[in-house]
Length: 287
Image 1 (tube, rainbow, N blue to C red):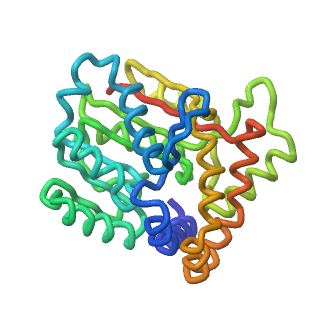
Image 2 (cartoon, rainbow, N blue to C red):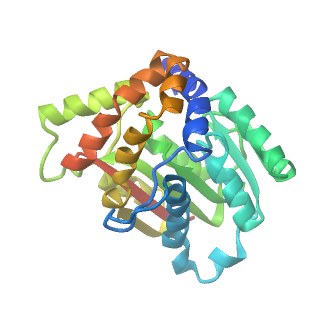
């Protein structure tokens, strides 16, 4: 990962994670609002529901493994430990989380101690393209909305595959753009994407079919994939509404320009989902 991009991502999350936790809580990802996106639910419950729906989709075809659990889990792009602690509790597992943000890693450690999970979790600053772990280290690789930050999507999935144990499960949910096989991106769409990249510190995103092709080359067995754009799209409307609370507005004033810029640009993502340009893709399979 280039030093400049690394620093941009680190600084963005160092600055914004505290405000996000204060307003939204520990989960820094989309919510799930039913297959067609019409279910009404409390915003944090929607985020927990996304985790459960991802697990259900990925594990249902593996017999009882979803019930018996995993022993060693890697959360790639762990934020402040939302998914990590949830998975540690859900499966009684040891969980390692990696992030580029020292602020996030320290907060995740604090939260793990608060929940009595300090002895079963480990959070550290690490580059997902060059993970500091031996081959075949984890039986579940969990990446919930971190792939969009990776400047080399092939290397990212290769690294996840490398540290996955034989027979283990890899789950990657990530921002995508629409498929382009039969219809290349228009100039206007490319401009919209460039603005999203600039605001949210993304090098670029690719389509779900492109991710699937990379996964096939790894290779991943029992490969499954799905587009959940409709199911998660209402999230951005809810986030926009939440910024008009006194708590959020006051926090933004002290969070720094990058966080303010991100808040001002929430409509980009909202419109991206409405137009079909922005997609939410999920890929899973076994080594």
